[in-house]
Length: 357
Image (tube, rainbow, N blue to C red; front, side):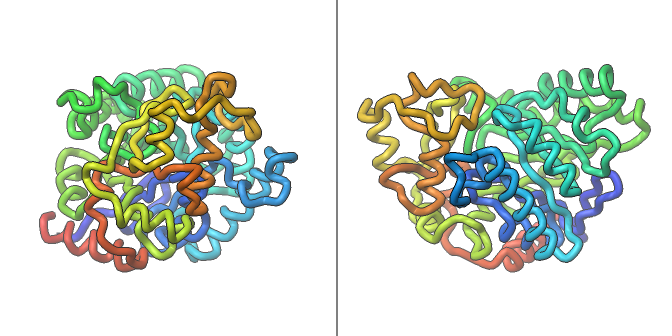
């Protein structure tokens, strides 16, 4: 049986797969454009997109906005009419400016997490840009829905619910990671219950997109049968030729073993999942000292106490310099064995899913 399309308002993705936004510089125009070209929803990361601009350090805000404009336009060109989104974290110091720029560039969807995007509708009102919060609990979904309904008379166009097997920064405490009630299938159920009254109020479906540890076509089908309208996948898309990361970054995914995957305490106060390397070993051993902030990217970061700059470490990793950085990755990264074209990955996921659907 054929996989259902993913419909978000008037947008229709032929394949119900959202490519997760991954920063710094892991999902830019090449990856996002090619995922959209092949029927999914491609997503550009808005975390320091201007890191390769010559004036990034001395003129950070303009460099980031300039680069974001370029990546959106390039992704649109590659996608040939496909759906392009931007992932904008609430904790970014320039959150509002980036949202305004994304809307100005007529991006199809803004995905927003790492905090509650309570004011997001204020900046997208009157535009065709869809707004999709990323949550890790039914409670967070409830807070957002109530706030948007009360203050802006809108509901989310869709919601991404991200479980604890995701890569990067997580919306869970270390104690919650392995507890049954916080696993994706359970928080998916919670979010589906939260949106029911808002679907009645606004007389439309609010698609819920399941994320975190989604790896196979069977995973996609299992989550759709639980009530999800689609899935978000990040780790699988790093292992593609079109991914914007360096070859050395991708090689770190190929080399990762099960025992290499670890939880870290990020300088911004969040738990994250990453691939263990010497840089992280040195952090644990206290060999990294507080730094002078050059980027000032995230609101929760305190450079006087941070043992390293998270943005700097991720930029170094993106470029393949793992002496000064590390790679975020999902819990299933150890299963990756080859780099493939986006087209092949999408086709394989769909073919496998349709065997089980």
